[in-house]
Image (tube, rainbow, N blue to C red; front, side):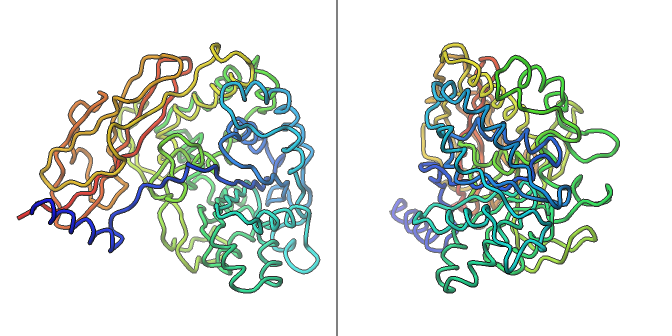
Length: 479
């Protein structure tokens, strides 16, 4: 009778939509489309180098050279070609370490050019470009998978595609297309992003809204700056800056690491400001791009209407996925730090080592001469249902490593994610650095969720990390 009653409660919760279902998203490759103002400064070229080392994980459908506030009347598609040419020299090496890398000739064929105008001056009648037409073709494909459009610079190529489709398609046709668009923009590098958000209010949009002007704008506050910094107060605070600084990049990426690594230019401001737009698409067991509030290598974002600030082009009219804070312990300062940038830099060592390993792959054709990521595996489902007061046991003993390396484990309570209000230390994990851990489900008066992360790291060079996320659904204690 007790089991029947519990099943009835579970069914009721499912019907209400309270119990989230862990996404099986990565059973298929994400579709990706890049808009880049490459050559406005070195970071776009840096990000493209990293992007190509992960291109086996995605179906890359376009790479378009665009303008931005820093490059208002020209594009630099020639630089995309240079970096893809370097990729062509090492693609076969990458393929021997992980399969699925796109052919060089294919990537060359999807490099396109956007309009050479700034923002909304490049949107409207007569403003079609090779890039906007190519994007429309991608959006019109008979493919149910979302298309992840990443704006590393200005977004007017996307704005023009939407402007044209609004005039050439029925409302139902356009609504269907919009339902598949997922946008991640690196702040607002022109005025077309706010126009898109306010005129096409059903578009899934991730952004730290605002622009930069003479150093008095928004960029130092944006989530994406956590890739290689945290808030500027005359210094970097919280994370380890040494592993995103030029000396580390020279040693592990640029020098003596093959032709693709050599295309990673010297940092002038911040390393790879555009990389967070695709880090959340890396299939590492942690990321879930359909749930930005879950957090991952690309940061964590919540759905709300942000307050209007003087550095924003115009007020936001509806909820968007935007800045959220995590509290993260830093061994550098031996203290906790709370910021939206911390949602990215908390994973910094893992994503930097991962990039270094992939550059190593590009420079050797021998599988045994490089390190490869472990496989994190749970001994139970990714979702569990318990009651307050139950002892919950979690196990990752099925994890393994393709190179036979020794594995270390760490279980993390992701306090900010889920619906149960958790303070630091509220959930006590036993043996949090063992393959198996346990805790007592906290008290709750209604169905709530807790997110825990299994982090598995090998002892290869460099150390590589993979994850599994466990969502524990906690019901009130049965009376």
